[in-house]
Image (cartoon, rainbow, N blue to C red; front, side, top):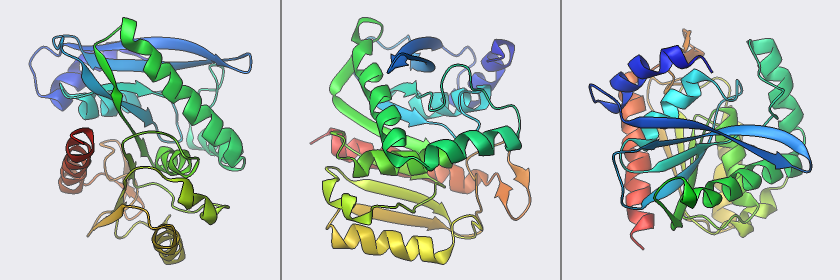
Amino acid sequence: MKKSLLPLALAGLVGVAEAAVVMKPVPYEIDGEAFEGVLIYDDAITTPRPGLLMVPNWLGVTDDSANKAARAASDKYVVFMADMYGKTVRPTNAEEARAAATMVRGDRPLMRKRAQAAVEVLKAQTAQVALDTSKLGAIGFCFGGGAVLELARSGADLKGFVSFHGNLDTPNPADAQNIKAPVLVLHGADDPTVPAEQIDGFVAEMSAAKVDWQLVSYGGAVHSFTNPLADVPGRNEYHPLAAARSFKAMDDLFSETFAE
């Protein structure tokens, strides 16, 4: 990552003049293959905090995704940003990102395995940061939102799952019966990448499995509405109000589930 970009961005996102946010690369392996995620937390907080796995968008581990994780973390959570592609795969443009994401999305067992491996890495960080491993959740953005829903369908033992403008389709809808915790989907009502049939399929899937689920549609918002760098009008576009409301919705869900 381009570390020179981080302090200024974090000051704006976290809302402090001098951000006490630590961003620590964490190497790990899956079946002998090298991966590297990022542990993100406010080191001014010494009491144990809940942890969130964060699966980034299709560009993977980037400054932008780290900043978004910092916004999610604030002083409330410890966040681990997963590496879904492997340490040697760092897309630099949409074409490369599409190829990497398509490979993982095309193999849902692999997607689930890599997401669950990242959960285990997060759990193992108690020696590095004050982390309450009894209170863990997962969030994801775009490609990452779809990955988090697959993690939920795999039966992952977490307290909640939140998808921000993610894809909702799955090849195995019956797997929703494995979901153990509330699911929150935060969706741009005008998102052209998530067709109505995907939404209808998701609603039917969750309802059939009797999952505790919510789907919030933000009027006027399209894909990538939480991404300040998204600037393709009508397709991928930042929507500050929808972004703020969606992060609040995420906080509200975890405040509820972590209190149980």
